[in-house]
Image (cartoon, rainbow, N blue to C red; front, side):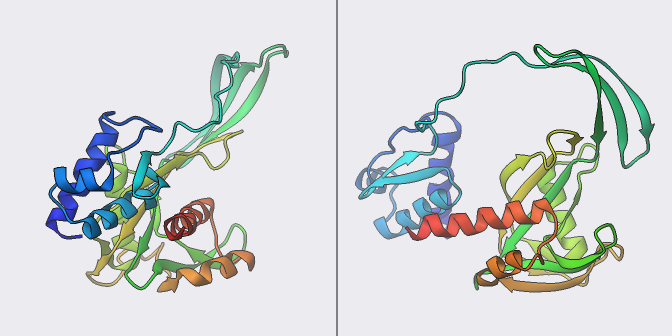
Length: 258
């Protein structure tokens, strides 16, 4: 996007993030926004398409948009959480801690539950103008398997996850993302493992050299998004972060096309 479109994108996004327009609320019409923000309708629609692709807004009528959220799914009434009476560490090093946590679910006798605490991770899907995603073909010894992965790694103490996403991409692939946008934070094994995973999407990257992380680097390639469903069906995509990020990208493309 050009400077004017970027300004309008940031303005509309600020309306949403500041709460000026809350979840489910209508945005002004295209005609109103075009006049107020001093931007042509064609350029405005490109901005709105990007916001829709990022799941910040949804189209609900011709030339009308709503802020995402505020749907019909009701939040259940507050239920009683588990009571945590204490915990003790049974193993720890710089990579993993294993704790025994003394818990008491409502109506159930208290017991000790294993909790594995891993690192905070950031993963990035880098897309180019040709509808391709930047990936690495790697060998993972735990499942004894070769497969495609997105670049990613551990968030250092005090480091912003977005900075990690960009840094790890450059170290592992030699490509520097022009920008990264947060998509979602999730826990891959919520019942027993604590390991926050943050997913980012980048649109565009600059080749700055060869990969510098010899341990993590694999064969680097730009993989067509059209091939991703087939690779998924063949079991050639490894890791929950890769799957979550690519499913988001594919779902966003489908939404934008509707």
